[in-house]
Length: 184
Image (cartoon, rainbow, N blue to C red; front, side, top):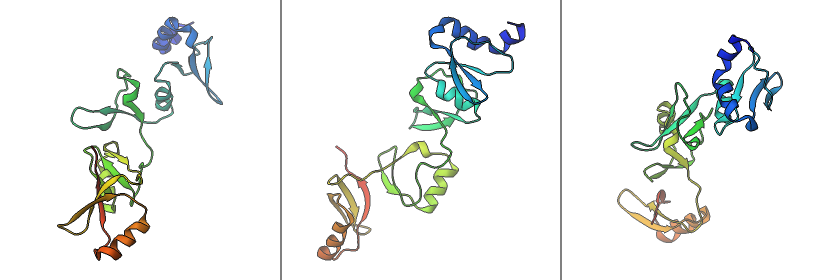
């Protein structure tokens, strides 16, 4: 091994010396390969086969890694540089597209659930706050709060949309607007 090879790969070589049974990942011309007898070629890229490997490969492939900051409320931030000093669960590969779209129901980290309109979609996208929200999947018979109008609300179990038609026919209210789920 030359001094140039040792210098280029020193971090991975140190890791490999402590973990030879795990091997290292090698960026071969036809994709990444797990190898157990690396040659440490100067022109090649080697990565330790540890719990962060999917993030390490993504970085080499040009993707952005984010970490979850929970100091105030959960929010994803781009990492520069990536040190991999936190639990693996606190990292993710930055989504290349929004996780939901206009018209989807989403829940904010504070528990408020709402339907995404165009202006909200723009604000969420511009501020990169996708990590503050999760897609809300309705659960049949889960109790939810509907706004009947600006001052009246009704709490009822969630049911498919045919039920809303019956609700309007029997109460003579406008179709209620879903506003929140009720948690214990």
